Image (cartoon, rainbow, N blue to C red):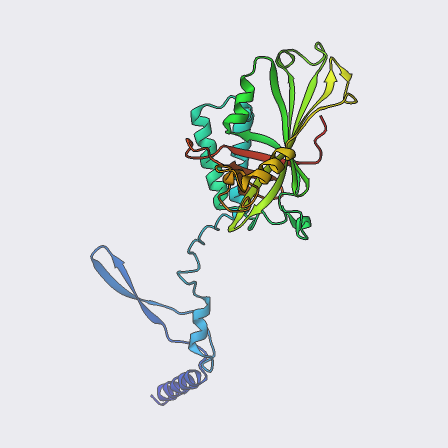
Length: 320
């Protein structure tokens, strides 16, 4: 009996020491559920810890419910949107011969794409520097642009000629405020045969205009026609660009109108005075412009709800 009492005293003393040092935790009960019946069993806790440590530190290793939540998709940038839209517009231009062979559905689709591009236009005050002032070096339009799409009737109708077919079309604005529209024409029959079998011919038409900004319209450019020139470039495979061009000067007409507009009724609206007003006749609106693409909408005629649109890409030169 004395031995049993001694053993009991030793066991209780050891348990007290271990409990004070926090060297282990007593087993915890766990509930096991099976169907509608439950039973309890002892589940040993094998985690050893120091009792001086903050209990909250153990929660750091428990994964949070929010850790596995999927991240929201990144918002598509305007550059990505415009790149995708430009690709779609270029595909339409290639499929429908720059708009010369466009169906009504294709024109509608192109207009929708252009309107979406206009919504992400990266350039503000796009007409700045067009007057040739001190800001001309920063003019967004200062470049050589080649047309890839149009819905303008006066240009699309050129494709209906049975004699001459429009080739490359440019808008050259390298020296603001002068803006020159260039249209190259080739014989209609020349487009039907391989270039190796038919000697090439080319006639270049140049329409010179003077561009200007419009008051109260930061995206609008006014145009005043100054001259037209027809220059033969090639005839049956031979260079003929040394021949004198056929030129027509249009500036004298405006000068004459200005002289008589002050005292002849009905000519006030044709005078050059007030040409910089926002709604003065002869202008186009810039809908989109960046380092690659320019989209403009010309002034609508009275019977039109909207003017014709032009999409042009920046190029290095306008050599025929």
